[in-house]
Image (cartoon, rainbow, N blue to C red):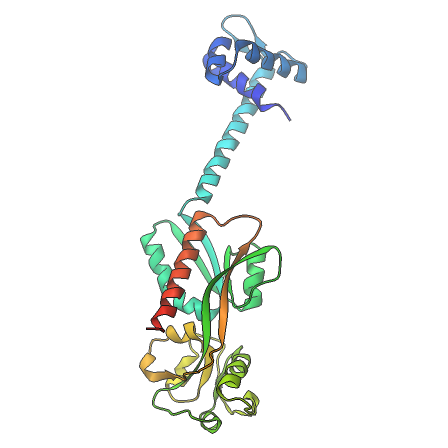
Length: 297
């Protein structure tokens, strides 16, 4: 590869038409600039510059000057891209579980409205897909309910998310038989979540499998609609319940020993998040912490 200092001296001579003025522009001695031109000629085995006045580039010199200009343009382009990478304008890819995603979505839209040029791509996905999407670099930030072990991922503890038993408003749940009478509204993680939570509420219970299934949905945004209609109960993360519009139609069973998951924000460990990703991540943290605080007042 050609030494960049040699090419910069050639560019300066072409701009100024003088070894002396080129040296002044570059902050070098005239001898250093002359040496750079000799080194170019030695390297390419051809005269680069005719010393007759005015100075004139040879055909080889013209080719080298064009090459130097291309390198300068490429460097300028790289600088612009690096600056843009640290701008608050541009794309941010976010992939989250449905529960936290429902609560975050409206607030992230508000952030976009207040931050012109920011574009947030938000996808809902289960945990394994969240992790893979970040590893594939198709999304910069993901949220998980477990801390990943993959060394390629950096994880930040961002919030806590309790599980909740949600049932129709006006219904009374005092014992296991009340759950059997009401029935269970299942979802992809429903039985696993219910098993964890019900073991705290009802120690020694005969198991979720003994409860009649009254419905199923793989859309967390729709899951509480049958509960609100009185068709059954379910177990969901708190953020999914908080995002449901008809809060007056549902109730939450209070538990003395809650089951709480930690939410982790993940991103690639090899490089830091850029400014706009960090802005989105801090907005997520604030939104989730505000939601958590509202439950303790």
